[in-house]
Image 1: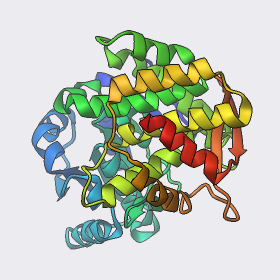
Image 2: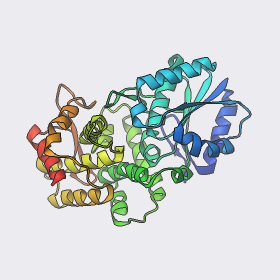
Image 3: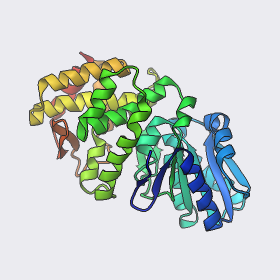
Image 4: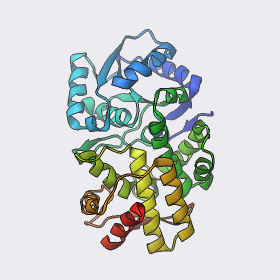
Length: 352
């Protein structure tokens, strides 16, 4: 897979990526190297990473607990303290090795430590490969509210090694595929068709194209003032559902992709009501995504709580809930609003 050039950093693939990382470390003569891992990536990914990295510098490993529930400012404080105790300075490099929690949180830690040190992302899940690690967004959750605290900051480079996908569960692969489906619906419908029509598809084949799409959008609008908002397709409703399931004591937490799949079904319904998006396509989206991701136990009693989370969405302006909606596949409209009644109808449509 060929290198993709983002605004200020390259995205290197497979073996070449480690050569470029080693070159970066040696050319910049970093004072110290730190690698941020979680319980899982320390056991399953770090051995491959350390074998392929060529440097004589000592690497200090900082480990955090795995899971979205730890993506918070308290974890950041722990990492900042560990780096300080281990002698990190402004010429240190932080390498993140993990999924979306690690790359989001690690990028935020690096970009704020001593007002900013260099960092490199090595995503190990499909979700972080095609979405979280690319685009310069870093951040943590505020309670169960997703990504409320963060900054825009670019890594020095990204190491994209699909071999790490052998370390994650099929459920996590499905979760990441939701972001690829998002790119398909908004930019290249072939991606959506490939996933829904081929149960035995090798998902690795779609990674490069997915990153290309995200990178093109980010290059045009790095700070999400305009067209980058399209990357939130399915996420307005999806994040609200994800937050609700995360906080609920009665429900098992959803993966990010499972929640975004629900969001895409609901927002497809809203697209039909507000923009006339084809009813047949709405039905196809609902059928296909339920087949891929299963059905979450949302009931009528949950609607009001989900609506309450929608109010806190980062994209809201002046108290209005903003959606990305579809006129058609590959034809989207930004900054759309709808009625509370239609939002409730969309949840009822999902559960029907």
